[in-house]
Picture 1 (cartoon, one colour):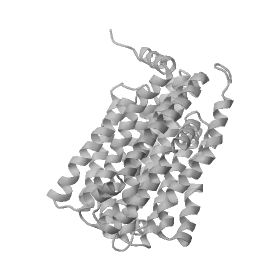
Picture 2: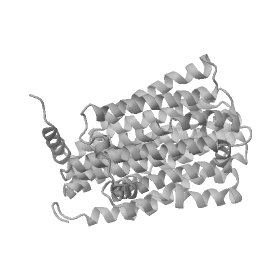
Picture 3: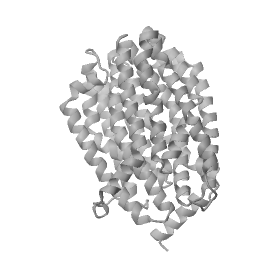
Picture 4: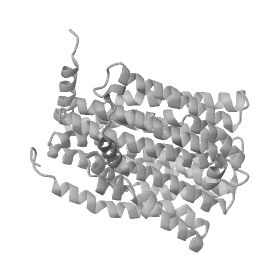
Length: 455
């Protein structure tokens, strides 16, 4: 007998509210970690293969990363905002509301990212300079960025679909599209760059095609009945308040990713004073450290559907237990990985660019970042938790810390006092400051949750 949608919804509800919390977080975090790692393959693969072209080309990857961060900012804003609201709706057993939110978000993401793509292409040269390009890096950055801009709409909706799937508790489905796209990118990079002799433009085309294929696979999950939320024109909301609620709930993600782009731009500009080697070195450090960071983000994202679903169901003890477990589990994993990368820092940097200047700058920068990542789960988990339960004001404050309130003043001031060392140690120092500010928020949350069924 065929399972009805109502039976599927009830089965999913029981899974999210009755499965032991530690088991549920682990179940949802593993595919999310894989998704995060594979997503990072896009950047790691491009950085690795492009590095063989030259130091300026390596620097261009860091410049375009800031552009991708802008696209991601809007994708994550709409995706996290919608995902959180969808999960809260499903926790309250309001499936029709979830469909309405998902459809509205999908089409809103297409429109917003389409505007970004058109404006980016029109103003591509000044945009590359704004993001930190030098005159020698510009030709490479422009050639790479054109393909990224062309794929921007599908890249943006991929983030939206990925987050809706995660918040529904179906992280494994989200993993499929992202994993296939990432592996395809690794295969296409050497083909386009070396075999077809496209150079850095080949890396851009490989990334664009991989994003398109990944988006198609994610979309198929919604079109084949594997989700409770749907994408359909008939569900698109005409109520502006629905969009405002999505944007407000997703503002911490926009702020976090937007500040990430600004931080990358400021870091590129500060590094450019010391030459293309400094830009390339800091770009490599960013890619490698994000591999460790991806584990933390993936573990934290495993908590988000658990916390939002159970918060919507008023099972607050499960939210508290999930938060504490995720914080401890994530800290242990990130500390172990950071130790490995710290020991092998010089070797790792050399694999990307065997340039004495790049190695001399990149090695201490990577080691410093490893030290900071041992405490990073406090700010990650706290920020994600507040956003997932709809506390947008607190989540916005927390999202502004790492690459905003803490990083920006340091990157603007420290080079004047400490030169290149100031650039190398800015991000680790910002991470420690952000963690210190996040800790009171975490303690307040643990103490303030009411008993189950209240509020």
